[in-house]
Length: 103
Ligand code: TYC
Image (cartoon, rainbow, N blue to C red; front, top):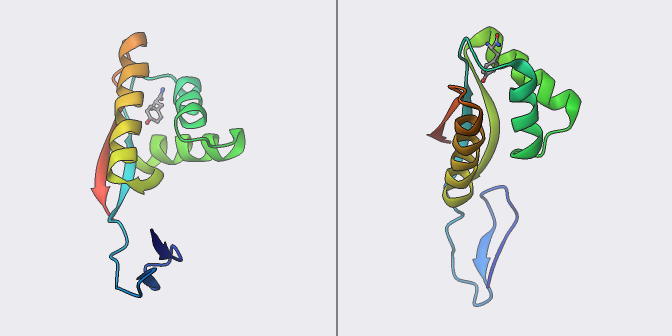
């Protein structure tokens, strides 16, 4: 059982041994010309648990600048989120994509 404070500083287990914090990954949402804005907001709400205001802000950031940060997670969670986005986009035949970036 490891104890750490989420700041990548205090990292001792019960025996007082040093434990490495997990590597974190940015999930980056990419712009395209076809996916409807409402759908992107829906994805940000369902997959990344953003509220309507935050989801809309991120969607417009991606729309204007080409990409934007959807969330930061350990590898397995980030990879699962990407699969979920792929699955939602595929069902509607939208080209929406997101990628992983090491922090
Ligand atoms: N550019 C898209 C449009 O004008 C909207 C969009 C935003 C698509 C964000 C993808 O990740 C995205 N319909």
